Length: 188
Image (tube, rainbow, N blue to C red; front, side, top):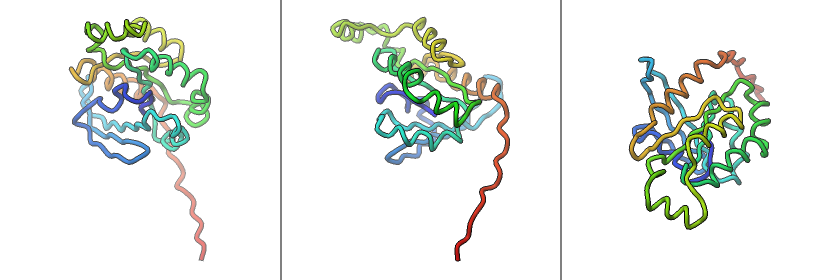
């Protein structure tokens, strides 16, 4: 599941992914050949950045192994919101209840623009600066994530690293026990 504020670049990880849209969530499915040479089917759910739709998140938990916590390195508020989402809000206990074995990966997006003079000037005008790699690593430790990676969907930088980390983390998780078939009640 992909979490983070709107407009941080969550849905742009892979333009070749198969995209299914509806008003509440977006689903991306793709086959990915990882660095280990094996092919994996990755399914990503993006519930958007609209926090009024937070109650829909839990509907996707049963199908989730790794949560991607995304922020834009150009948007310090989106960075701070990761800590708020995980530490202050109900999200971490909520996930612990539903999926005690799930893992998280913190992802910094839009790194291609971190050193862009125009972007830096605009941030400076707002008395701000781009988030640096070391800050992302620190955030990863603060929220207890399994790792921190950076990427740019525009240039493709780090996209494979994101997916390779998802595969690595997912392979290290305990194997889920098969669920019992759902019980049915027929009313005639």
